[in-house]
Image 1 (cartoon, rainbow, N blue to C red):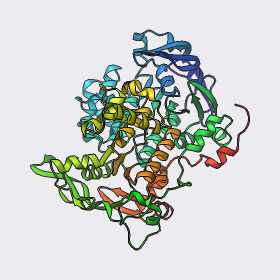
Image 2: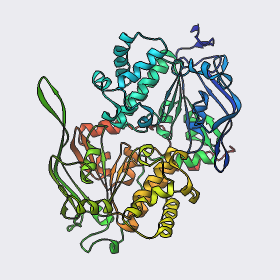
Image 3: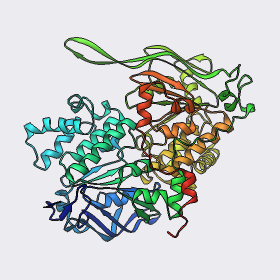
Image 4: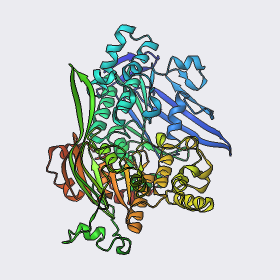
Amino acid sequence: MTHDTHENGDTREDGENGENVTTPLLEIRGLSVSYRTRGGTVSAVRGVDLDVWPGQVTAVVGESGSGKSTTAHAVIRLLAANGTVDAGTVRFGRRDLAALSEAELRTVRGARIGLVPQDPTVSLNPVRRIGEQVAEVLLIHGLATRRAAAAEAVAVLDRAGLPDAAVRARQYPHELSGGMRQRALIAVAIAAKPQLIIADEPTSALDVTVQRVILDHLQHLTEESGTAILLVTHDLGVAADRAQQLVVMDQGRVVEAGEPRTVLADPRHEYTRRLLASAPSLTTVRPRTPVSAALLPTAAISAAQVSAAPADPAPPLVEVRNLVKEFRLPRAGGKARTLRAVDDVSLTLRRGQTLALVGESGSGKSTTARLVLRLAEASSGQVLFDGTDVTTAKGAEVRQLRRRAQLVYQNPYASLDPRLSIGEVITEPLRAFKVGDRAARLDRARELLDRVALPAATLERRPAELSGGQRQRVAVARALALSPDLVVCDEPVSALDVSVQAQVLDLLAELQADTGVAYLFISHDLAVVRQIAHQVAVMKAGRVVESGPPEDLFSEPRHAYTRELLAAIPGGRVPSPATATTTGQGPA
């Protein structure tokens, strides 16, 4: 056993696994936080008690709006301008962070407590190179000279799992994929080797293999240097696999806490049981309701009939033939270079069905979707929509396609106009295509909000007043406003907690059964794909390496890359929903 004194003055005794410590690194007691809004003061966190120990991961889970992110941000007082810490203490070592001045806090933020925000799009400076933003942390805290900071920044980016770190350091945020930007944020957080990392949904935008790399690295930090991690996540699989302590929050309060295996195997609180029942799993399949034949063209058939492989299937709604997309890269050695992002891809999507594209960040799945929607020009190949070649469509043809095909973006922070009210956001497509009068459009907006589990009062609010999960539900409602034939869903539930995720997936399935809408569903969450997709195409390096029904593809994967994706899925210790809902009937 070793005995040492840390910089913050805490004394800790480390056993073989570093678990025996005398005091928590972070100790929160009676924390209460409120927000001032136009409708009055809203209490977001109510009397929260929480401990984070050196060398451990403490995961905070709960629905969107439960107060988990507010609790984490209150630790270093990075709340919104209308947020106030009303009561409580936040002890970090021997100091109460809640009582520190702003100048004193600046010596703690970044150097001793690192933050990984949820959204890389708004957290990275768009006009500065990635390497400069990592190096800035080292320079501000005097950890490197200006000459050495650039090289050290590349090393930090490499430790954060960013491929070709030296190249990425010279790029701007818009030149990186969403997953790469998130890894850059993680690099900023770990640059100064802090004692505590607050990670607010650090892997929600990452595919499972990159997620595993990032989480492995964070776990390595806890084991090697005793770094503590306060992990805010809606992914119960990640919490079960990685955390030593699990804290469940609901409506601003801690309703249950303990070791993950105990909490998840025998949840005492009804809210915990409900969260667990909503968690997606590769062992369960969401029932797929057949589409009403009356809603399809004469030649079409139901989703159930399609899954039974009929002799005369319906004509496809979308058909992609040998699609290629190349991007020009900067010249090297006087030679022109190109990147083939989509390489000879062929896909078929029928009415009333869901085709899922899965693969790592940079595999070409989002680029393929943009080509289908005519948001990018194909280098070669064809895209047929309802039998019509739209590969080179222009003008009125493209406008008609826009009405019949909608898109739900991955990032709810960047996809909603911050200047508009939620009512204006949802009704904007209706106004653009002159559908209905103002009263009819508002009625449609209220109906859509109800279907995505948001109250009608949300119509008057702005995007900035909503959580990430609430904004994504608004984005789904907006995409459905025109009752399109096709909705391209680019990671539509990656920002949602499990219960809201289940609601949205149920909503998508219900709408598909009612209207025959088809979904091109892009996701890195194979458990979600298993539940919603009729067909799955696995992409790697721009090519489809394997495709088929999810039951066959996940139970007997033929390609090594598919097997690698499946092996990286978190949550091996999460009990099945059936177990969760029939155990743990004790008092909260």
